[in-house]
Length: 63
Image (cartoon, rainbow, N blue to C red):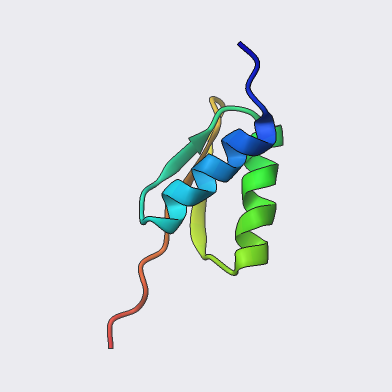
């Protein structure tokens, strides 16, 4: 089964927009996610490991 990397990245961005963390196994998908998040101005913490990258949404500061 062939999965589009762009569609995979877009589904991960949707998870992040809903407040969930997302994991990308490849650098290519991680870069696509990172670019989309920058475009949408969504702040995340990125934890890069040997196995892949975690994208963890940053919580807004409480007032």
